[in-house]
Image (cartoon, rainbow, N blue to C red; front, side, top):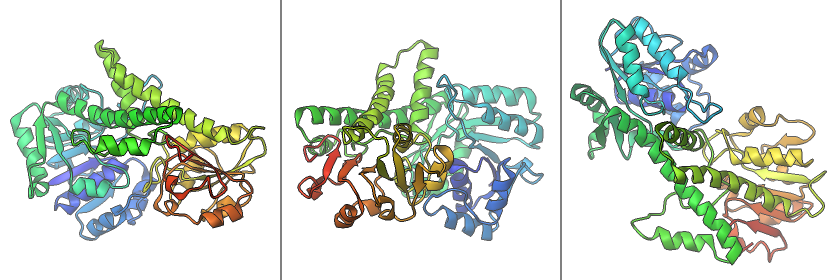
Length: 438
């Protein structure tokens, strides 16, 4: 098939490169000229394991091209994917203006009947509205499908080729069969495609992310209870996770969820409920618990310094919202570093991939904050170390070297990955979340 993909972010670029690797001919469209120039040269503008090789292979094979507009060849494409951003508005609603901008472009440029598949996460009813726009303004019959993405940052390439499911929302069987054919190479081992209505498909994406966020917030609330009553969240996790009805995934307490999906999608689902006159009390509580968890970590840090943080040096290990990505959108570290700087602390930070993005989004390097390539160098003269992201090279560090380089002995382990090292007995003032090891 010939397919255009609008958007070259995490979703759009993985989708474009993945479809090309399945043998389709792909044009990836983005209005950002500098980004397109880099992509044409094989330079992926963000960190995602395996994606650079995937893009390079399909550029060489001439199955993948990049452009700033839909060209004549792909104006007659079989399908057009919409994978543009839908950031949150001030009131929590998703901003779908970019989705409809693509709709207007397609209405003006396409030269034959085709499918418009919406990958972007959008409120329920968006695909219906996009269908009406195209029916009213496009001279060719376009069939809108909802095809939400379920790609985890840090594992997006693997998720694309080995999906748990492919959700397709359509209002006519013919479009559903065409979409199923597009994903046929992913169907060789087992049935992965689930076809439903467009509105059900749109809601499925919000429901899935909100369910995962619910598990995280539930465990974070339990971690605070564990601290209060002397229980161990790690033991509790093992105990409940061994129940097959519950499972082990997304049961890790930490500083709260972040990134481009969970905060935005939870907020959008709450707003959708309000618009429909349905109170989603559990989902609202999930968002409130997430904010409370970030403040709980902050209080753990503050408790290290009876005389305040003014003039104290604090090292922060990990800035991305999770490992294996350079994404810092709504990262818990953003809240913590901002509060440290507001309190007058000097911050020395390290992240193997996200430092540049973090500096641009939250705090450019200056006299109060510095960014370091080496994690141990960031410790020099520190009064405390705060672990915010559990990158692999943090899992078994040299605590002797940590002690040698630090001036103080305070450690706040916001991910709970050092509880087995006996750090309190080793002379550190060790604090974590939900574990008596602290």
